[in-house]
Length: 119
Image 1 (cartoon, one colour):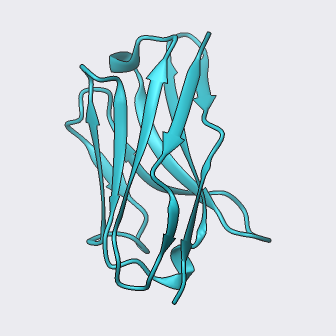
Image 2 (spheres, rainbow, N blue to C red):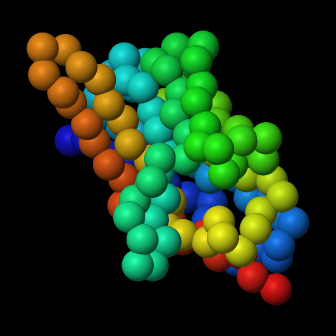
């Protein structure tokens, strides 16, 4: 059974930091690219960061570039999102996603973790 379980969310003041984790099980983690998405109230879900299956390629949304860092540990089957210099506009539910293409697209989503940036 495929599972993606996010953790590490919470309430933080502007300028603070959080590290999100997403623990994966039930599939071959090292074969999948991993991404973090977020969805704020009343807004569409948006891609925040993505990392290739072996971790050699990363991509970021312009709004988080230079502040967020995505990484992965293919031994622990976990992907991380280090978030620094947080702003109120970073407030959202953050989701991790696993995806690969092998003849057809395979993708799995976590249940999300709330991040609130507020003083």
